[in-house]
Length: 360
Ligand SMILES: Cc1cc2nc3c(=O)[nH]c(=O)nc-3n(C[C@H](O)[C@H](O)[C@H](O)COP(=O)(O)O)c2cc1C
Image 1 (cartoon, rainbow, N blue to C red):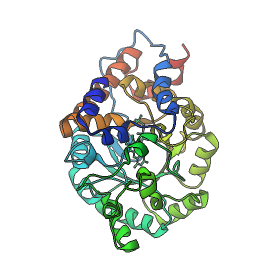
Image 2: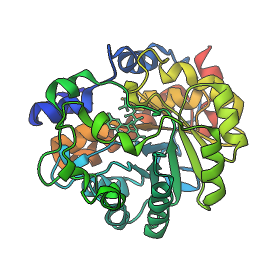
Image 3: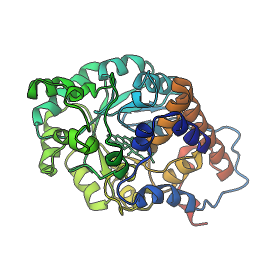
Image 4: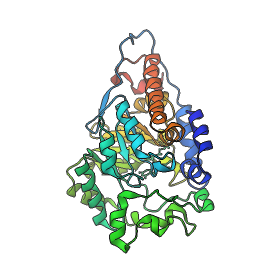
């Protein structure tokens, strides 16, 4: 995976690679995310018959070849020309569900058509124009998405200093297409015409209207009341917030700090997962992302109580290195490593990946 990272970034423009790699401010949480998984020791069981292993599972009602979903990341066309279509085709071939970012550079309808054999979940932000959220949710449902993922760690955008230094803007031909319809209604221009980042504030400034600092629990109640699709709440790091989300009707919780791109200083997700999982795993689907780089990290996540894991940047690295084939290889690596890690830890089934593996 490290090779994918270095080759991918070397092939991209500085503006694109900085946009993908950045965390907020001093990037401490970004680093902690990776380090915290690495620090977790696994006390493997021996003399277990692991000749037949099963990695397949179901998350939020969606079939997964192994306990993994592709995290929502914006603007895949910055990594390769085919963008999200390449990601969707690779995920489909690997049997891994895809969470599509609302800031994707390909429309949800096209992505759902490309993801033939797997489910697509639609990620949403609640912006200042509440009607737009319902618009996009309805589009996603009509396109065939099977779940909604509401990101709640973004009342304001985290400060990614490299994007500001680079004056991050979208190259010609790349647009945040899912938002354009409402954007046009708003002021007669699409996001690209208004020039994302041309004022020097990066994506934070140009897309400020897509999020809302007044976001609160009543917005989740509102969204739940308006939707028939199951809703997962993304960006939780605390037990009390997880309980609140599930009490409000969320069917899933995604333990995440946005890949270190929001509050710098937030704990690594490997540190916040266990408390959240213990609180809600019997009532809701618990997934974790942030720093997952190996199949062994997926094993650790399950031992800490998650039902599944997810990753953002590794998918972007696969895209940058080889488009659809690159993402396919990244997903294959993660699945193969996870399968071997199960065998080496003495687990033939996912149910055998339990907390005692971490205490010896
Ligand atoms: C370039 C980039 C763009 C992202 N865009 C979104 C987004 O549009 N919506 C969202 O909920 N999360 C977004 N995220 C956060 C990811 O969904 C995920 O939480 C994070 O990437 C996990 O950390 P990892 O990259 O270490 O795997 C983005 C992350 C990156 C790196």
